[in-house]
Length: 398
Image 1 (tube, rainbow, N blue to C red):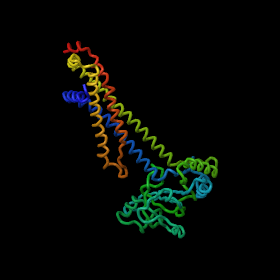
Image 2 (spheres, rainbow, N blue to C red):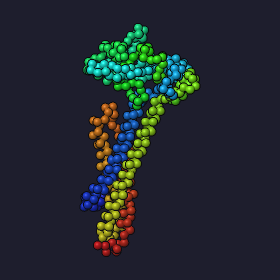
Image 3 (cartoon, helix red, strand yellow):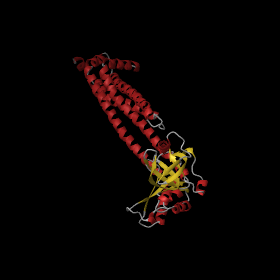
Image 4 (cartoon, rainbow, N blue to C red):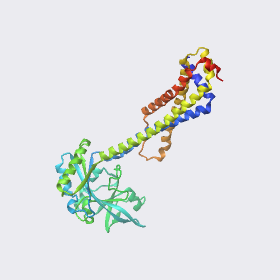
């Protein structure tokens, strides 16, 4: 029997048992949709997280003091002198900046708002790659005259000034008044590894000294010349800080590459788990196909005997039942792929604006092939059983 004839007969048989065929197809469709969704979510989530971190720069290392007691010894605190030492002693460092912050109250016209007052040194904008949405950043003129100026986040600008332009207006924080010269936001996120909060007032570091018990920095940032040197720079910063402070002091020096690697590992682990779930679903769908096909063989035993008596070979019978199993799995695969592709499009309005939808088309093709293979694997036993039926015994079957 040629292939078109086998396909026509398979379609006729499946059409004669619509509900049974639909349920078998549904099991494969759910499994295939799960696999497609897993691959799509994994691809887009990994790209989104990676993009957020890389937007800041994977060649960034940062150091913080690890407090061992409630009262931190002053000799352990990092200072601007440590910044200078890092810049001069580590050859692969191209830029260094530092910051410190306290929480202060700002009056918004109705109530006091707790905000982060962040004092930053020169080079902070370049290292953190801040985006200035309105106004400007600090310049040398501000430093020369010790101008009491600040930048604020867009969220804080909205809370304090509504839809109006905040540039040129004043903000009173901790009994001091600052003139707003700009509105800024972060280019990306460090997943919590940042002193910048939604409500933040940014001031030059010299203006921060009245809020600190001494001239110290909470965080020191260092930018490596190339991403390949980040690990080396991270290690050398830790060694340098340890050598400049007392032996008992501990410093946590990390980089965004480690954060990026951790995000990728989490994404991979999640993907593997979801692929396992999808594979189990596909296996259940395959078992369902086998069960249905075994029932079909029993129901059609007399038909098989008649076909064998009329000259059909074992291979003809085997191909016929295999084609029905493959047809069920392929229809389920197509339906599952359509559902797996449609769901991300339907969910797109609820996703972050910067999150695009990309599909792993090669993986989708592989998923289709896997589903068809499931039909062959789980359909072979019933097909082989049908092919090996003795014609005389089959003809006597009622």
